[in-house]
Every structure is written in structure tokens, then in C-alpha cells.
Image 1 (tube, rainbow, N blue to C red):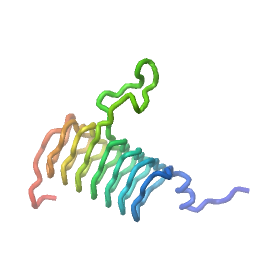
Image 2 (cartoon, one colour):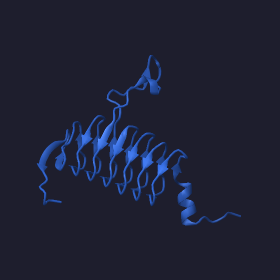
Image 3 (cartoon, rainbow, N blue to C red):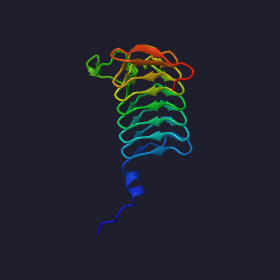
Image 4 (cartoon, rainbow, N blue to C red):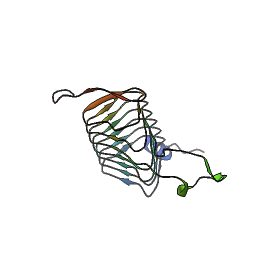
Length: 171
């Protein structure tokens, strides 16, 4: 005889949240989420197939859409929108091996990234390590962000280039 699972029980089986994760009040997570060693602020929503690694910090009231990868060294401030399939990079020169052996944490240098309050990252964008995305900036879908984005600026392309600056009245 097989026991029937409730929707909540099934969803719990399909999530992986390590005991070292700090979750704020009212965080919503969907199936197939993998979180370990990270901090997630109050009322943040995390979509399906999202991984957030150790040392990453996600602010309050953020929306992290499905298939997104947030690696170690990424700080996302409050009220940030992260579209579907956004990827962050934290290693400027990634290699599989060092001296003929698989690399360990001692063999590479973490390059931190910051996404400031109220920014929006479009679907499929890639954010390189060492970049700061300014407050309320908008990164267009599919962009590759290779350098800092000023506050309230719209960028797009590969590499991402400034398209315009948002006025005080634009939203």
C-alpha cells in the first residue's frame, strides 16, 4: 500500500534547504529549489529550479524567477527582480584543475557581485563577477553584464551597453 502525499508534503520532498540556510519571515519557495549556506530576506519568492549557494545574500521582498543560479559571493539587496534563467559568475578565470588535480576552494579567488536595491535583471542575463548593478537599474533580457551599471540606467546587449537613463518620473 502506498501513502498519498499532500501537495505541501510533495513540495517539501522536492526542495533541498540545508540546515545552515537563514530564511526570513514569509519566504515562499517552489519545487526543486536547492539552498545551502545562504541568507534570504523576508517575503522573498524563490521559483522552481533555483540554486542559491553558500555565502550568497538575498534581501527582502525579492522575486527570484525559475532556473536561476546565484553563486557564492553574490549580494542581492531588497526589492530586486531576478528574471528566469539568470546566471551569476564568481570566478574570473575558471579552471577544472590546478596542477593536474581537480581544483579545491583554495585554488581560486572569489569575485563578489552586488545588485543594489530595486534593480531588475532580465530573463537569461549573465552577470560577471566583480560587477555592481546600481539601484533601480534595468538589465535587458539576454544581456551579458561585464562592467558596473549605474543607478537608474537601462542596459542591454552582449556586452551590455547603456541604452538610457531613467528619469524621476519613469517606471
